[in-house]
Image 1 (tube, helix red, strand yellow):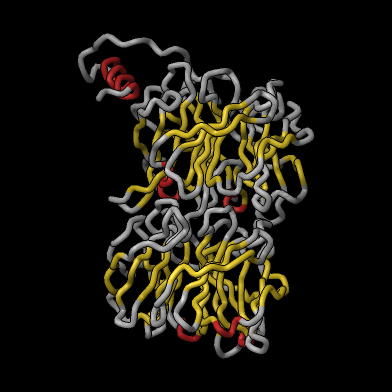
Image 2 (tube, one colour):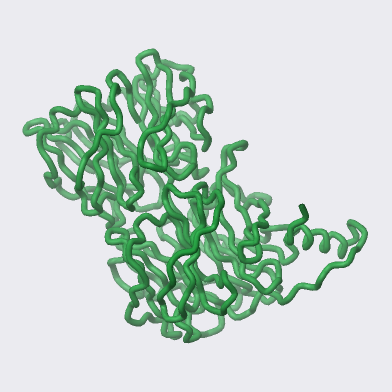
Length: 555
């Protein structure tokens, strides 16, 4: 079937002489020149970001050349590390660009009206119960009524949800559209790409055949037409492009500009989406450095425990014979039927979930051989792929009595490794590089031989820093070690006792889709218990989610 985007490409080919010309309608209008994210009122698109080290909210004013000031305006000195923020366009119908932010702990969504002079006014509560929402975007008039709307996906749900804007910072209830949006980990409003007078958007999904992610345009207000593309061109390696945000037409050439961060180098790229949708994304220009220590005001989500990239958290487990199985999570928050992934081609004595260590946005695992070599076992974004060892991180790791991973503990936006040295009890932080390697280690704790069941559980208290759980051997109580934004750990806080009946704790992300990180513990009787995080560093309840798990190495 010929979609609207197909017709536009055929027209473009005809215009360039690549095929015979046919009858086609002229585009309704070019991408508007007035930037939707002009917070300072000077006619140029700006950028807003949160600084990882302290949670400061920063405004980077734009220029006519499409670059941004290196000395940002501090909109708030702290308090934004636990907020999910997007540059939203004009939500309040006053002609000024606004911000939309969700408090991760409470699930409250708020509009922060811009004043047109680089500042923000008093927030307007836009909604509650937004914890189960996975990614969301604004800056788009989806229904064509002239007001800015929200597009969102929900955890454990394949549909797209549209919240119509009311023009005052509030929104109507959601209208759901069928799709496969459970596979999307990023959504970006892109303005009117195909010149039909209706706004379009873009999502990032995994490609199960090639083992990395691709970008998909959704054209013309949800008419079902979409096209695949990548963010890479020439020397730009698109799997490593992490954060992506919309700028608009910054130079008047009818192309739409985006910005993206290379998570390995921290480079900020400006990229253009071709107005004829033939060359797709092009003109990659580096316009900044050090942006891996910032979080753009755009919405994406970590899939560190979603090994088949279907929107649910999963488990890996290895039996006594060395066979590895993928246990997919289900939309109801249970564990599905296992799928064999074969065995490693070396003797492995430990596996651990690690999140994305090689920079392709797909979750990986760590595997240590009996000889002490530590490897990345790469994820492929699909169930049933043969397990293998690729990047060798290093040797001598059999001196470590605990190795955990799966979160950013250093504030650079990359997943790291934490390990306990058996001989000394020192706790070491090995910063990740997003290339399947680690940088020089830093000691972040002593006396950790007194602890067991050390687990990297992600951000349990929604303060923007990754945390640890560990059991103290002397009292068998479980302790929460809150992470620091600038790196390191706070002192432990007791959150429960009687944990001598547990022999394993594994991180599973948000397993029950309520917006808070959870964990699973294995009882000595072989039962698996899901501990439901409450967003404040502890949990609300536990429930049995599996039986007969004795004898498995679980990750």
